[in-house]
Length: 211
Image (cartoon, rainbow, N blue to C red; front, side, top):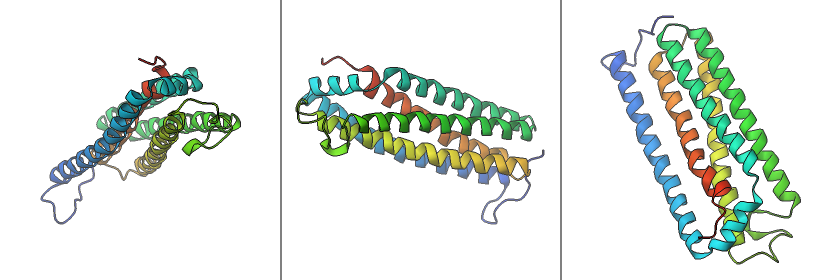
C-alpha cells in the first residue's frame, strides 16, 4: 500500500502535515501528563499523611490481577509498535490485524478491571468512603479508594478512547485509507495509555508497606 498523496490545503506537503500531526499529539500527551502528574502528586501527599491506611488499601487490591493487566497493556503496546513497523513495510493488512489484536488486549484489560470493581463493591468498598468497609477502616481509607476509583477509572476511559482509535485505524488500513503518519499518532496515544498504567500499577498494587 502506498502512502496517500493528498494533503490538506493549508499544508505544503504530506510530510509537513505528518509533522504537524505528530507535534499536535505530543502537545496533547504533555497535557495528559500534567493531568495525571497532578493526580500522582495528590496521591503522594495523602499517602504521606496516612501511610498505614494507604498500605491497607493497597493490600485490598489483587496484585495478580493488577500485574496481569500490566503485562496485557505492555504486550498490546508492543503489538501496536509492530503494526507501525508492518505499515512502514507496506504490509497494511498485517498492520490492521495487529491493531485488532491490540484492541482485544484492551478489552481484556477492561474486563479484568471491571471484575475488580465488582469485587470491591461486593466488599462494600465504593468511591467517597461509602459502604460497609469504611466504618472500621483507618482514617484515610476513604481517600485512598476515592483516588483508586478516580484514577483507574480515568485511565479506563483513556483505554476506551484508545481502543476506538485503534478500531478506526484498523478499518482505515483495511480500506487502504490510512497513512503512516496517522498510524504513528494513534500509536503514540496507545503508548501513553500503557505508560500511565505502569505508574498506577505500583501505586495501587505493589506499595504495601506503610513507610
